[in-house]
Length: 327
Ligand SMILES: [Zn+2]
Image 1 (cartoon, rainbow, N blue to C red):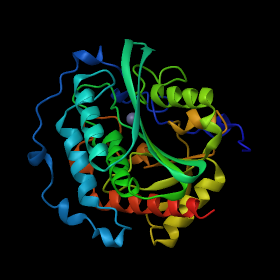
Image 2: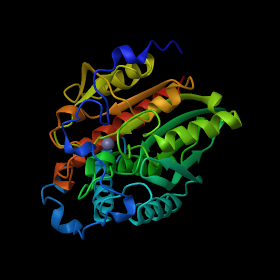
Image 3: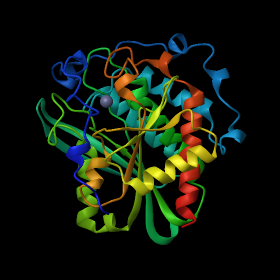
């Protein structure tokens, strides 16, 4: 794939390069020292939230209310940085949900050397077989930023919820190509975002798939991140594969979502980079985190999340997968 030099286009990053003024970028000790506060899901869920969701029949079967409930569940575990007991609870939840949908999945337990020490991490990969060997990969990270009182409803609760709901719908289906759904640990930097302190899980998975040779079978990787905001806007991410950006944005336009999927450009370093660097055509569908006002702050809480936004992005992902399956 003809990737141009990404560095030329990087104008903002998902982690800490631009907003060094944000307190969100500083680490706060070892993850095990971060104590999840007690949080009542019911108390923190805005009462109007459930009414905000379109009927699943209008969004390709994707249930925004179910996705919202998955966000609330994650938030109820408290802060979920890599290596924390709270993230282990989320891992159990993900595996039990995926199992209940009849999904086949593989887990990869590995350890990563980080600026706050060696951390245990776990990637989860759902594998839905197809008639042909090639693969459509969907993915999200599910860890949250290492920061006190940061519950990450949008980052990474929303995209994790999105992938769970997509798995519920896609696991019983059989298409021309296999669909894999990746849940990456360790996307967030432990101290300062860099190529070595970030994307631990996706780098691990891309490396493993390279060794096995499976990475050559991936014809497209669609990454979701920060996809649940009430006022979310999605901009074309400039390091992503242009053909895939076009596919997703044209799909969104056909579905009538041009007010949310806009044609302006942005740039983000994210888990798609781990696959782009290995030649996999990839697109990052990421909410405009630079301007949402709560990114990497404790204000990234459940009140920022809209079941409607989740449903719209879910609809776009489902239709984009259909498009890819038809090619
Ligand atoms: Zn983040």
